[in-house]
Image 1: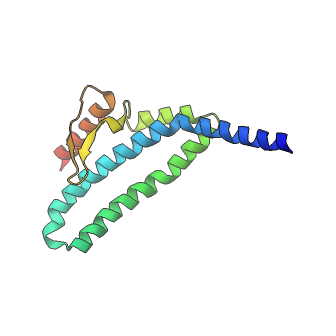
Image 2: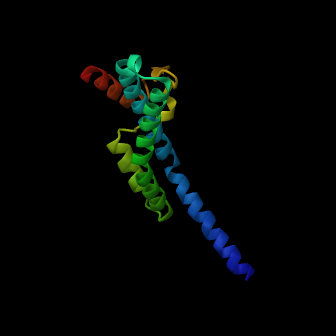
Image 3: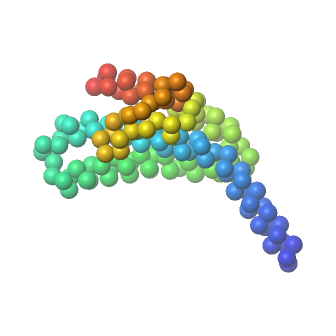
Length: 141
C-alpha cells in the first residue's frame, strides 16, 4: 500500500514537472494578449468615454478581459495536457511561432491604467514583435 502511494505521488510529481515546461509560453501569451486587449480598450474608450457611465466603462473593461480569458482558456489547457504527455515543447514552439513570441513578453512593461507601453527594450525579439504589432494596429486605426 505504501509503495503504491509513493508511486502515485512520484507520477503526479513527474506530471507536474513536465507541465512546467510550458509555463513561460503560457505567461508570455497571456501577457501579449493583455497588452493587445488594453491597447484596443484604450482606443474604444477614447471614442466611447464621453457617452459612457462609470458602470458602463467597467462593463466594457470586464467584457474585454473575459473575452481574452475565454479565447485563451482551452488552448492553454491543451498545452498543459500536451506537456504532461511529454509533447508540450512541440505545442509551445508552435504557439511561440504563431504569435511571434520569440522573447519573453513579460519583459515589456506598460501602464496598466492607461494601456500605454513604457520601457520597452527593443533589443529583445519578443518586445520587437509586440512593438511591431502595436505599431501596425495604430497605423490601421
